[in-house]
Image (cartoon, rainbow, N blue to C red; front, side):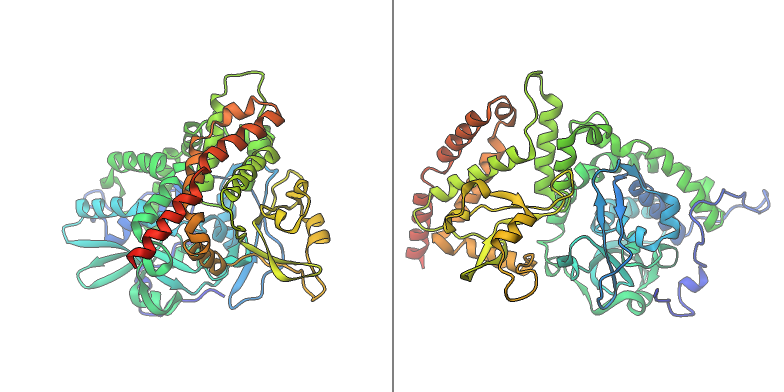
Length: 506
């Protein structure tokens, strides 16, 4: 159920918008009378619509939404992507009428809205209004009406960011992505602080960016710079800047809000035509059709869909290699072959340490083994037939066949997971597990895995994927082994030296 804002409030004096696509109507006023200046609300509304159209210009695959929903303190729908479908722009008709579709499209875009739009809002308010207005991003815990998630471990991720616009002593909350929580933008895009608290802010008020699980807005900016292949910080921001430079603000004065939205939507829609495709072409793809015509990039995109900046960087690296490949005789590496390269590098790192390595991430059980077993990770939809597969980086500790390092989830569950105690026998690692593992890196094995991770990062940055594509399978395996062994040579000794130095200092 959508929460309603209290009566006699800021929005009571500004009726909500009821449409997104009405044909602009001429303002009914005498030509002899001067048109009123744009108000603060109208200027913010213009920025809101422009950002929304930038979102609509992005490409998405078909969304699969089950009819059932997850029982929780608010309504939660778990959705997936049809990885065989074509990439298309946002269905604006569906966006207008379907709150759940809105929630999926605007999901995880609130930080992007704040960091991309803040400089434009600040600059244009200063340009158009005489009064001093301060614009700052703020973060708080939201109370959703409904939510859309891909994985159950996302249930608690409800930190939300908006822009706070302060005029004199009045605080307005400018929210470009409120739809992600099931609250329609038409009635919630601009609220007073009091309305926000009454509508969808949890107790506790605003929180700092560091308290919300990030290292601050600087790290958030770095994340957004790589998000969506750099779309927001390159193409979208550049086109927005050009739009605002050429926008005839005078022509927008005196219009109704519905008329204003329609007029700006037409201008912005034209400005963002082909914007996302332009971004994709800059990273090695000449058109989006490549994704549907080439099996491996499509599967790779699915593999890294739920990962963030690092995974996108790997995908960009692969696409760049694909776009710049000049050898006609070489064929692209398969998903299995690329994962095997990762496994070989991990094996080399493990072999560089004389102690038994610690595996991590997904706990499960095996018949006859009383202690927890930790698989490296699982990811859905890695194969074209939508099967789940499991990659195990540490199966040697239980003398399992090395050839079973990658297998279907069905085989993995049947042969490796103990279900004698009921349930499915395993669980997806929560964020708490991952944070504990991160802390353990500096303590177990004298901090070796911190050194190994640094060298692993360097290894993948230097790895010549194009060279590996031109090798036969056996040659490629031996080549990767040699590269990895050379990279991890002396890693254990380095960790021991650092551990000894830290011990002596203490």
